[in-house]
Amino acid sequence: MNLSVTTSQLKLREKWTISRGTTTTKENVFVELEADGVVGRGEAAPSARYGESVESTLEMIEAARPLMADADPWGFCDLRARLDMLREGQTAAKCALDLALMDWVTQRLGVPLYRFYGLDPQSTPVTSLSIGMDTPEVLRRKIEAAAEFPILKIKLGGGNDEEIMATVRSVTDKVVRVDANEGWRSREEAVEKINWLAAQNVEFVEQPLPADAVGDLRWVRERVSLPIIADENVKTAADIPALVGLFDGINIKLMKSGGVQEAVRMIHVARALGLKIMLGCMVESSLAITAAAHLSPLVDWADLDGNLLLAEDPYRGVGVENGRLLLPDRAGLGAEPVR
Ligand code: MG
Image (cartoon, rainbow, N blue to C red; front, top):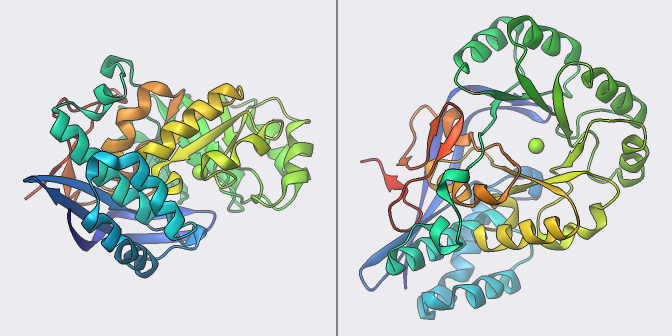
């Protein structure tokens, strides 16, 4: 296989703030794998939270180049396992290669990815639209612009939670999911905030405390009624068994799992352990978002909106109608470069 790699600065429509900080652009890495005249495409959205940068992502992809050059793409499962042996972590880079492999394989088979996994494209969930932290004026404008989306995901954990929720509820009574992004400072604050949110048509709360506060997370869950979902506490299938009793569900992201093959494994492990499943994302183009959307018929909740934050999306793929994900029916991932 021939492997080519590019990086791209993706400009956001507006600044994006969560409890960890603010961004206005995102630099992602794009790969193409070519063999027998077919090109498979993949994307990496490196995350500093998980020890990744554009540089570390490029380094991982270069380390994989000899492996990919000699490999038969039909050995995609074996290849994915060999990527894990090259480096620990660096799952965004592994995701880019995994997506390119699966795009190639499903294009050669002539089927969309959802069909390869035996899924019904009519049973995709609605996606929530995430609203970053902002001033009341900007929040109001963003919530009004999100009229099409039946469910919002609101970012809290930055110190002005009361102001944000009061603003949200002054504009809309629709269902809200809350993501604290590890931002609450103590287990007492987490319990107080979650029980306060329970009276405000909030469906669940994501990652109330830092991932290493495992004992506190158990203490919190025993004192609240809303479901608690793990995000920063879970990357791959191996992380899931330890979360039973601490969380009600998990947020799977292709950039954390290292692609669709591991994400599918995670879905089945989580189901077997009785956990609910959300499919989430980083700031990604429609290439990686479309790949995740193909798996969405398998999950309870989708939060696949990273592409909607972009001023210019370099790919076209999954659509949204009244909040519901619309899968492309082309062979492969079905995401096409916008030229
Ligand atoms: Mg999250």
